[in-house]
Amino acid sequence: SAVISQKPSRDICQRGTSLTIQCQVDSQVTMMFWYRQQPGQSLTLIATANQGSEATYESGFVIDKFPISRPNLTFSTLTVSNMSPEDSSIYLCSVEKGFGYTFGSGTRLTVV
Amino acid sequence: SQQGEEDPQALSIQEGENATMNCSYKTSINNLQWYRQNSGRGLVHLILIRSNEREKHSGRLRVTLDTSKKSSSLLITASRAADTASYFCATDEPNKIIFGKGTRLHILP
View 1: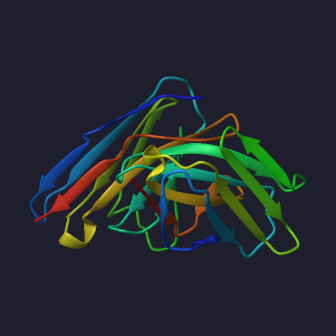
View 2: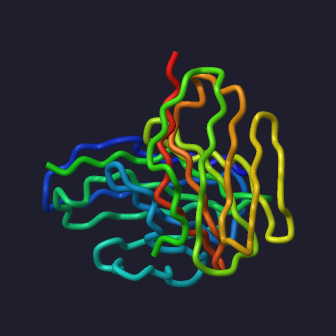
């Protein structure tokens, strides 16, 4: 299975600012996935990031709010833009490896 | 959209007892996976069961799949304090997986 390094692990941000979350994978992967987990809730897929093409966003998520970069096959970033308290969540990246998906340790974002 | 629905939403049992969680889904699947999440951190993949399998074991975990009822169950035997976590089922869609709402399991000492 893959190993994912995700950072930052947590942050407290002012409303109206932006935060960029990074995920580094120890092997090359075609697709990387970004999830949001609101307090006490399950994971919701934000978008799928492919290297060399624009990310594919799920219903309810737009590129202007959650721009994603995928410069190579081992790295991706998710930016949470113009944050509001409703964006307070855990954000996780994930890759498919073998017989399941591997997840980063998550970024706990609090917007004040 | 969420495909899986876990039942119960929360479960508290004594250490040493068995814990059973259920997952129902709506559309046809190729496989179903179970994940564990400790204290809001990253998820850990527990087990994958394919649509042509009915039961699968991994250590103290036993997963069943009934495709006619579109349901799966996760059994944890001889529970331990370290099993306290949230458990999610996830079903596959083309190029992604969709998570259920999860079951919060609390093992009492």
